[in-house]
Image (cartoon, rainbow, N blue to C red):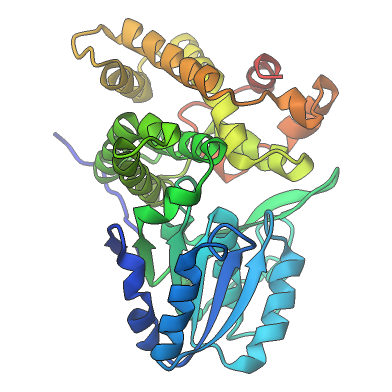
Length: 397
């Protein structure tokens, strides 16, 4: 087997296991005594874990400041936090929450040493000034299993509306020092969040696996993550212990791997479309992924069969179809068909809403498509035409 050259970028140090959030206070103390804790508004702070954690911070001699993030973070939220907390000489930033919390904290950590606006560095909409670091040490603790932000170098920020955007502040200095993965933190996730986040994680793994930049090392991680989704997704979603606990462990692992894989080799058409959809309309990112992935996969496959029948992604899609269906002897065409069918069945079973439920109409499609050609679309296994992107949106309207 011939291995083409590839590069693996910086990764966080990873701590995985139920209950391991208890190790956080001593870990944080190694960076200094003043810390900023960023959380969501309710999901973690309303649990007994929050009071136990803050008591442990105090016992460790830490001075801690607390801010909350509600919804997808904006550049204004990041700038306001940097201005507010920079005089406090923060030595470590901790994020405990979903992807929005982690992204906000990541950007804040990157700018606390410098004090400038995130718009100086935000891709495509800012001033395109280079960021050189350093960043304040950052520790990411996800309480959902979807975005994989705990393993990436980019903080996704949004400004919603007709002229809105969803763009990244991206640099290797922003990679967390630690990703602390405690599957027990997923216990408070409602079923609809498990569903949307799980489909996001699987989509990221699948798109990484067939990416134009795919390499054998990342393929192995993506494959392991997809196997974990197969084994644990619906156990976590159903929420019936003891198998739900095992499912949460599998999904926390899968989401972590999805963050690693997307950070290394990029994504595809689903995430290309998700960026403008999430910027222009109030549709959650995981819902976009879940509602589009089956039809986007089908259109990718049909485009390759028509224009690039030797594209290696066709064989990879077949491999995933065989794995999900537990039928290792299927021919490629049948395996690809079963992959599409399986993804559509997941969508139906989870009752993920269609695009029209968020005020999206066919009249919006040209604006969405015109703004979908960002970095994610650049690594889709085949360049899709505007008509093909229109077909994806039409089928899920």
